[in-house]
Image (tube, rainbow, N blue to C red; front, side, top):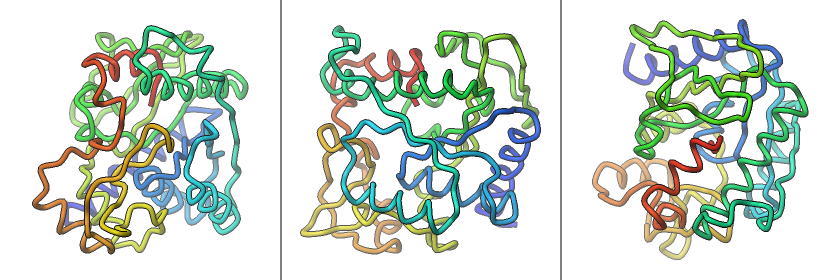
Length: 264
């Protein structure tokens, strides 16, 4: 097995463990590269069929290309799509910096969906290498009754042994891509031929390296117009993956405050 085979096998094992132990279970689908890889892995894990709903927590501010992609692949892959809205920014913690406050709408929208569907497990496509706060995560991470993440009270996961506690009022965030790197995601996309929103590829010298809401996400300078060119670019770039995310340029603790409160 090569490194991609090993990552794939580990993620499929995690997805099957989540499905066996956590019900009701749903997968977050942000329409970006990571969640599309995660959805592809779920289809592999369950013989071409995703046996749980996929959730899109919609801020109403995604790019038109993202909505078109969502609608196309819901049909093509026969997905059970759950849509959830987010509250207006005026209802969000005013002490947060502007971009983080806008992003926090998704935290509130996700919490509402978890409660609405009484979810015991939520699968999310985060990676440790993407942001320093996410490096503190576990593969199976319990969230309290208020959806908060207690960073200091996480189960040990030695030798890939995972715990799925079933305490009253707790739900589990499942992270099957936690060990993947950005370049692994792209190499897997190339190997498997996974479809993506075309905003990831250069047009007029610009492309999006990370996709979010239109008002808080910016493109980077790039001539990478194919998957192979993106991989080649990643092998030499020193630019952060989240360089185009506005909230990452605000106060130092903004992202961790969001994560502790239940952000993705």
